[in-house]
Length: 342
Image 1 (tube, rainbow, N blue to C red):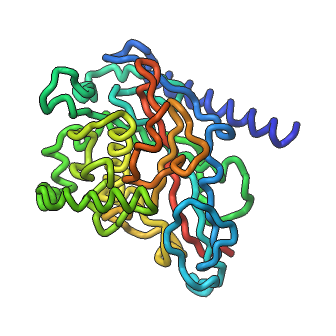
Image 2 (image 1 turned 30 degrees about the vertical axis):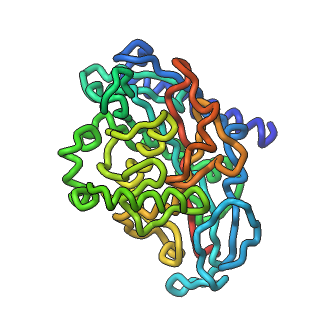
């Protein structure tokens, strides 16, 4: 059997095993709770923006350049981790997959499967933009499911490269069972500084972050901003400035990523500090991530196929949402990695 056939067989078996294990844990029911869940499995070949891997650098030199903006890399091409010398590599790696939906227990990237947990949890956040007018028409509430998805490693595109994220496809986090994600008062436990930025002056500064993220990369110093999407606080799925599904879902995903960093679940991997391993990053550096849409319409090419956090959605919203059958969002998360390679 050829390597390609073995790979496709492995992918099918892995997805089937994942579906069966979820179904065994709690029966999948499309009618469970309000709203119909839609989505499809991510094709690891056709639905991936492979040009988002680039640029690849050695020290400050881009050995595989790209028109996509890149973070600063260590200047020297050689590095030292303890007594081990190496080459200072910089690249972008797909590491996580995320469902972002207003419908609880909707697993968009698992084929639009909706689970019935067997108890009433997570459903209070079922809310979307209202058509009745007033301030409530801009409110929406989102849930996020976070998957381990070390695509390059398990596809063996690059063999024996210790810098790659390793592991298998797995569900790591479900916000339906996280009370901090649904209640803004409880969220203050992990982001008490939010009160300092709840003022017009701080929010006005986000306009500069919007311009920077759209033109090149977001401004890490403006950590309370999510660029054109709005404020990064509170670190939950309650979006009070909803313009559309693309904007609001990207904001919810950015907040969730920041929440993982604040809880010390996600760590830093970029810059000189990341050469010898991951490091604590309780205040997330937005430049470390790119988000690529996988559902309902995969973005696999173009300047904004894997746009950074806070970039304007004006250039990526067209054709991304379909009424009724395509309002649940899925994203592939790309992470910048600097590593002292052997």
